[in-house]
Length: 194
Image (cartoon, rainbow, N blue to C red; front, side, top):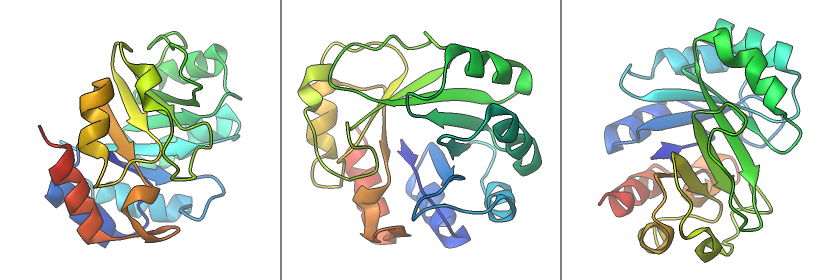
C-alpha cells in the first residue's frame, strides 16, 4: 500500500504509523511537489522497512539519477508514457527499485516489460482523483498497483474487483488538492487491509 504525494514529516509519520508499505514524494511540477532538499529530509524520516519512492514525470533520466542519489530514495517511479525501456535500463545500476506508472484504457500491460520491478496502472486522467473503469483490469498479473480514483470508501471494493498486488493513493486522502488529511490516510489503509 502506497501513499503518494506526501509533503511534510507529519504526513510521513501518519502514513508509516498507519501501516503504509511505501510513501511517495513528487519531484516534478504538481500541487504535491517537494524540492530536492525537502525530499532529502522526508526520505530520512522514512524507516528502512517502508519504501521511499520519488515520482518523476517528464524529467530527463540524468536528472532523475542525480536526485535519486542525492535524496537517498529507495525507488524511482517514472510516470507517464514519455519514458522508454531504455530510460529504465539507464537507471538499472542505480541500486534503487524501479517503478513504472502508466495510464491505461484497460489493456493488459506486462509487468517488467520496461525493466521495472513494479507497475502502477493509473486512471486515464492521472492525478485527477476520478474513479475509472477498473474492472477492465481483472486478470492483470504480476507486481502491479491500482491507482486513480481510490479513496477510503471504495478501495475495498476496488481490491475485491480486480485483485491488484497493491494500491496507490494520493488525491483520495487529501482535504484540499496537495494537502493530506491524516484521518483519511488512516481510514484508507484500514479499508485496504485484508
